[in-house]
View 1: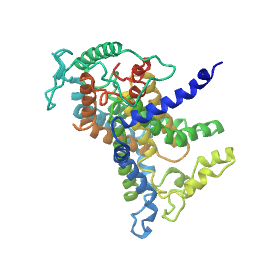
View 2: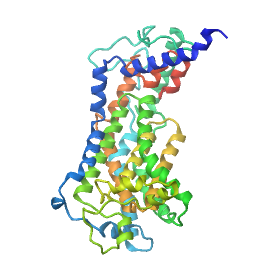
View 3: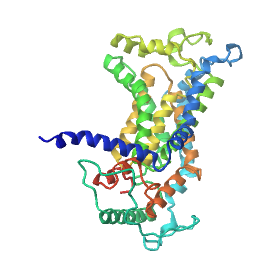
Length: 433
């Protein structure tokens, strides 16, 4: 075996890393890239800073801790057979319908008429200061820093142009039907999930018993591991597979809901279920009480560690039950996946995570059903603000489509498309192909 063949895998890794570096910069210098990163993720960083330093607030100026409020409200809203449960179910359904009517029906029924009478030969935009030629240059996807990729055949310029022409024709047909929304977009996920939340939460509550080690580990997997990795993987997935700007929207949506949630914890503190079950409903809560891992103590016992007990013991916000940010973050991941993913199995997986997370928080005795539906409402509010705002989803989707129809590869490509540009794998990372 020749030395050249032996070195091919190492050459491939070097070329791939080179492509990732320059594709990430995408025409920017390193300073601008870092600055953009910090700006885009500033809401998330601000939330983490507020949460971490919440313990510095003097106890004597903190508000009263509500011990029974969440427990009694939860019982009123969700206990079947009580008058309050019927009222709550009707209220949730009416609220879901109003959210649909006011915020989502117009967007779901309207299509972008801007391109209805256009084809690629006559394409032009009236929102741009200048209109470049609609036909691409033969090398419009080339970059001086990105060379061939080992193990991949480089497509010819004619092949690339033909593929882009075909995809752009499909984009125009998609626009006539559904506007600029992504392919297979479940944009009605927020009101539908809210309408079904009462039933899902009660089902999760009924499945909280009996206690098993296997259930402990499953709940730990969702409440701890997926809670951390699901938003991270969603962010990476958006950056690699979807329009430039979608990751920024995700960061701002998470930041808005989590900052609002933390301020609610600080201004309206409520006792979690474990406090009631450990100390009783008539116990007096105070800010000197350390946090408690509740059901996760069983996981510590099974794993032979004190990791979760020690971590929750040092929590800066002990009485942050309402709203549940575990619920809000899982729901937000689902909303973005349901909106952007063209693959139905990913949407179903994201919805399954929401249901699993709701069950896990109840099973581990960390949240009431009230906390979870409150987290859902915080997520819906944050997502809907970006959905109806002209600078939100509509601008990101519109700019991406505009760039594609102009053969502007820098602004009309995902990270994955740029890394694997001019290869057959490029289309796999193209959400519009």
